[in-house]
Amino acid sequence: MMHARAHGFPYLAGNSFLGVPRGDAGRPYAVAGIPFDGAVTNRPGARFAPEAIRRASQMLCDGIHPHFDVSPVDVLTDLGDLALPNTGLEATRTELQRLAFEALGSHYVCWLGGDHSVTLSLLRAQRERLGRPLALVHFDAHCDTWSDHFGESSGHGTWVFEALQENLVIPAATVQIGIRSSGLKAAREHVNDVGGRVFTARELRGRESPEQMAAMLAEIHRRIEAAGNPPTYLSLDIDCLDPAFAPGTGTPEPGGLSTNQVLTVLEALHDLPWAGMDCVEVSPAYDHAELTSSAAAVFVWTHLCGLLAASPRSR
Ligand SMILES: [Mn+2]
Image (cartoon, rainbow, N blue to C red; front, side, top):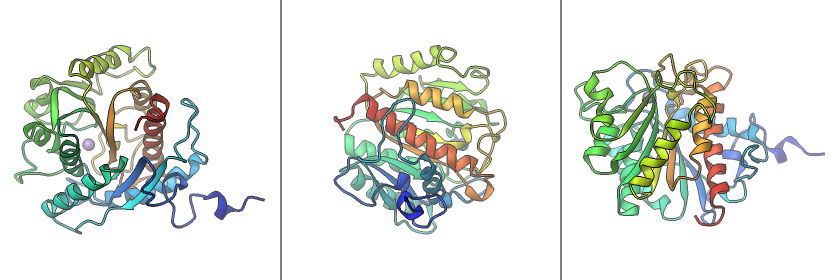
């Protein structure tokens, strides 16, 4: 008889992502939590996301993906949550970049946020590790290209602007998907204006299958290929989803993507030269029935399985 403790159920304490061993330096893939939400605009709570996503991931059981038919459980480790300062964006970013750089030395890392301000540090660490700018695939309701955070120099809505300024990402290979929040045109269209591409949520209405999304998927492949197939970073703000699919987030925006739309894109882009990913802005206190943390767990798992299906040994 298989007891609950041996199987690892969501309601048991001390979960790791997919139940994998903690802190195994020999495993090439890792997840790590970034429990920081000091830079949000509205509802806080993303510091509780890593544990909620881990708990939700337990229902993925043996981890065998029904589309890719692989499981990451034998090659994945959970690095736990990074030890970061409790408040203060600058101090957090400095320490996060250092810890991320270190982790990237031995793993392909999927980061569990945290609010979206963490991505700037992660891109700085990736850029430092790779020695070159990255392509960027960015799911979000928000453009995150504001030049300031309501008068402060940086927040969770400025990181794309800053990453472009710092040459961390390649403008023509920067793609945003799901954008729909209010905002000045100069911010909303900033990525288009520097030569990248913004696929708004409106543009994607009614398109969910690979066939219906074919034009967008081909353009993303084409842009990354045209840039010379640079290492590509996936930043997935859970608020790209409609609040019907992901109510547990800090700045929900109605009129968003469906879970299936995001899965179609993740599956179709699984063969890109990925360098890392994050899933951010889950705020468990505002969640209902673990909808949001479950979606986050499934996205991270799908990304990992897609990588393994594309190149099981090369990373
Ligand atoms: Mn957002």
